Image (cartoon, rainbow, N blue to C red; front, side, top):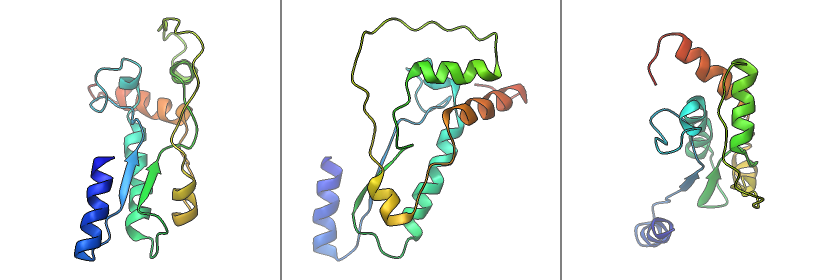
Length: 139
């Protein structure tokens, strides 16, 4: 948030437009090492690039801050289900955390300003990452 305030000030005094991208939790081998389930998917990182490119190439943006995400909440249980759809023997048990509200980044501004629509879901990400691992790549 402080960067967004600083960017707004710098834009005002320099006449240079600065666009902020709030990038949602990207799953991947090197992107979220502290989260075991997050290490299972890498493809989302590559797919965030399309939204960032649209932000750079769109002629006129109506907002200076955009959320870059899938536009929906994805639970760890959904990630595990996606992995199991490709790798049926995969076993990973989540601790019970009780009921909590689900939250996600709203991508309405991104959609309205650039026409962005998510095209890569959790199941496709799991399949892509598992194929990448099977091709001999290291985690």
